[in-house]
Length: 261
Image (cartoon, rainbow, N blue to C red; front, side, top):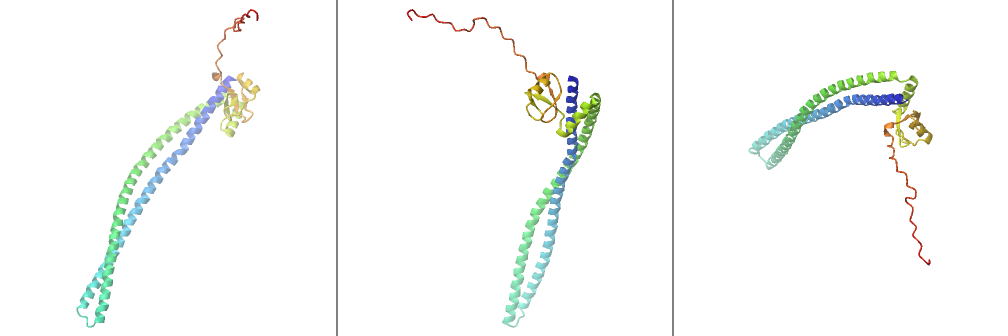
């Protein structure tokens, strides 16, 4: 029975290692996806900043055309002031001249604001492009690292599978089937008993079950149904022998009575 217990404990360790390696392998694409997502976000920021710069340049081109148009109008109005014949005509031309001058001031202010926005966008674009370069290099590093790690995991998993198959071949079919059924349902099929408890579910054990385990038997936990075993290596050390008491030792000495008492 002790040989069977050792085989099942080893098999469970192999199964847990296989599960861990499988989880690690499944997590590798996630690391690449996170690196790709970070790069995509940086590229989007770069594209947004670049589009903003193009938009501001287009805006300033339009503003410059409008400023030129109002300047030409103002020049014509000034020329007309020299040949007006009535005060009403002069007043109307002056009104148009003031409007053109005000529009020139407004449009030039918009141009200045656009230039300030462009300066900020150029800074954002430079930072975004630097981030894109950094994250592009990081992505390639992650991909190379994940490829190497995948090969390592594949090799480790192949070695574990070989050990697992060899070990399963040595275990009696009825015990193997029972163990695998429990492992599929509970995550583990065998658990150590310690301090009169199942370490798989932490439930206490009946005295009879505890005694059976201490005798080296393999029994089922009444709570979780896992196969239970007792590790002889965890048995408490025997107490050192105590010296036999000497007859009369430790008794209180009776004091003699006083005379006349």
